[in-house]
Image 1 (cartoon, rainbow, N blue to C red):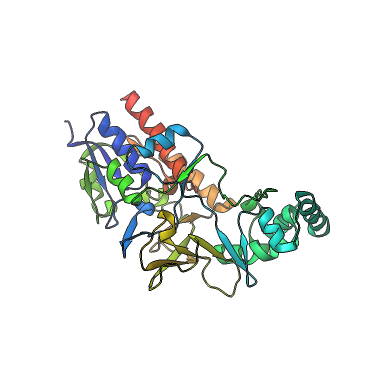
Image 2 (cartoon, one colour):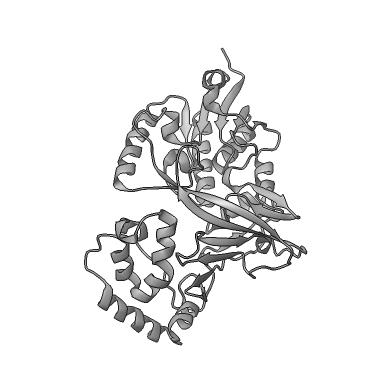
Length: 370
C-alpha cells in the first residue's frame, strides 16, 4: 500500500534540506522533521538587534565550483565577504592564514626569501624525521616560533588534550603563503547570504512540510510507517542505538553579548590563541554582512568535552573512533530504503559546499533510479 510520503527526511540541515528540495522538484512528497526548535541545522541564524547571529559558530560559504555557487544563489544572493581572520597571540595581533604579513609581524622579514629561510632554519633546528604526535608534526612543518605562537595553545584548547598526546595526522599540512594575502580561502567563490543563512534554508524548504521540535527516536515506528524511504542525517551510532559503542566528538559552547558600540573588534573573527583565555575565538557577526547597526553582537566560542546531551561538532577521527565508524558504516549499507548523509552520519567534518554537493549527488542517483 502506498504510504503517505515518498521520503521522511530526518534533519533540516544542508544535507536534508537540499535532498528535500531536489526530491520535491522531481514530484516526490517529503516530510522533514528536526529535533531542534528551528530548521537549518548548524547554519541557523538568530536575529539579535537587527544582526544575523550565526548561532552555532561562524559559517562562511566558499567553493571553486561555479555550479554550486549558482545553485545556492538561486535561493538567496550572496555578498562578497572575504574571510580574513586575526589572531591574538602573546599580546600582539597577527594576520591569518600564515602569510607574509604574519611573518613580518612575527620576525620583521620583508621578502619571501627571508621568511622561507627563517622557517627552514627553524625546521632544521626543531623538526623530527618521523613525527609521532601533533607537536612534532607542527615543528617539522613550520618550526618553533609559529608553533608556539599560533598552534600549541590554541590546538590544546580546541581538543582538550596536550599537543604531545594528539595524533600527528590532525595537521597533515599547514598552509603557508609567501604573499601578502589575508584571504583565508583560496576558492574563487566566497560570501555570506544577504539576510543570513535562514533565507537559504527557507528557499530550499519552500512548500515542503516541516515539523520541528520533534525527536525521530521518540516516535520511530510511527514515523517509519509514514514514508517509503528515509533520509537520515543524524548521528550514525544513534541510528543503531549505539549497539557497537559511542562515537566521540568535541563540542562547543557559545556565549553571546550585546554591546552598546557599533564596532567591537573591527573584524568578523579574532582567534585568541593563548591558554590564558578559555575561549578560542570571538565572532563579531555584523561584519559578515557589513552591518552599520548602532550596537554589535559578539560570541565567545568555548570548546568543551562532548557527551550525548551536548551538540556534536567535531568528530574525533582517531584510529579507535574511525574503526568503530567503519563498523557502523557496514551496518548502514545493509539498511534497505535508508539514505545516510551529512557530517554526523558520515562521521566526517565537511564544509558547507561539500555537504550540498553530496546531497545533490545522492538525490540525483536516488531519483534517477526510482
